[in-house]
Length: 243
Image (cartoon, rainbow, N blue to C red; front, top):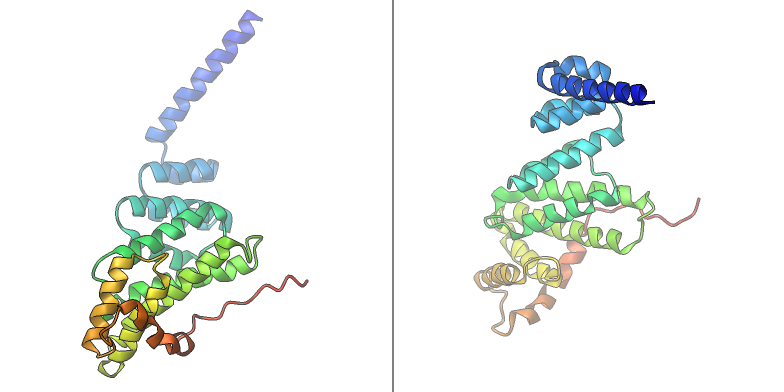
C-alpha cells in the first residue's frame, strides 16, 4: 500500500513538472492539437487575445463567447469600453445571463463618457445600438424573454437609438431642431442615464434652438412627445409564447 502511494505521489509530481514545462516551452500551436481548452487558457494568460478568439471560433459558439466575455472584461478594466462594444458587434451578443453585467456596464460607460454629444460620435452610438438590438432579438428567443432584464435592455436599446439618431441629426444643419428634441426626449430616461448630464445637454439644445419656454425644463419634455413617434426604436420580434 505504501509503495502504491509513493508511486502515485511520484506520478503526480511528474505530471506537475511536465505541465509547467509544457506551459513554458511547449509551442502553443502544438498544444492546440493536444488540448484546445488548455491552449486557449494559455493564450489568455499571455494576453494573446486575437489568437485566442481565432482558435475559439473554430470550436463552437459557446466556447467562442466564453473567451469573448473574458476579453471584453479585460478591455473594460483597461478603459477600452469602445473596443469591447466593437467586439460584441463583430461576434454577436448572446442572451447569456452571465453576460448581462458586461452589457449593462458597456451601456453605463457610454452614457457617462464626455464628448459624445456630437455628430462624430454616431458610429459609437450606432455600435451600442446594434449590440443591444442583437441582444434583444436573442432575448426574445430565450428563457429570459419578457422578464424585467429583457425590458431593461429594451429601454437601453431605445435610449441608444435616440443617441445614435441625435448624432446623425447633428451632422445636418436642417435637423438641428430634431437633435434638440431628441435631447429633451432623453430626459424621460434619467433613471438609467446620468440626470445632470442629460438636463445640461437638453437645456443647452433647447435654449439655442428656441424650444425653451422659460419655465422649468422638466415641463419642456412634453414639447418633444412627437419624437418617439417619429423615431421609434428598431422593431424586435415579439415572443407570443405560442409554439
